[in-house]
Image (cartoon, rainbow, N blue to C red; front, side, top):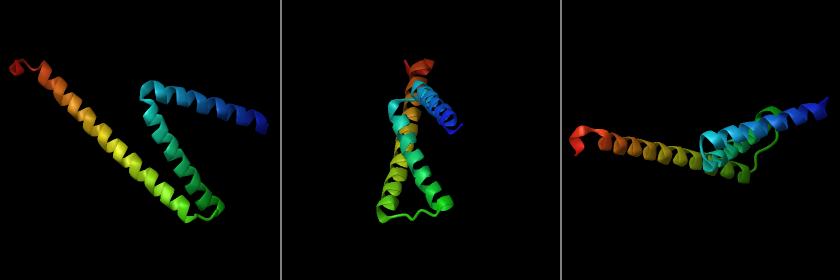
Length: 94
């Protein structure tokens, strides 16, 4: 039963990976992978009382800061592209 459950989970993870990369980018997939690692460490600490080390805490903080910066710059780039597209399409810009 556990082997079949493990296989189903693996297939689900692979399928979700395919969907994420198809809809976004490989970099976004990497950021989600870091988020998953942070969640696993947090889960281990809260439910299993697995102690955090300073190395874990520093790694989680760096990952969270990196995810925040990535989101910020992606949002800023997306807004810039929308503004550029809007200016190119408006009749007054010619």
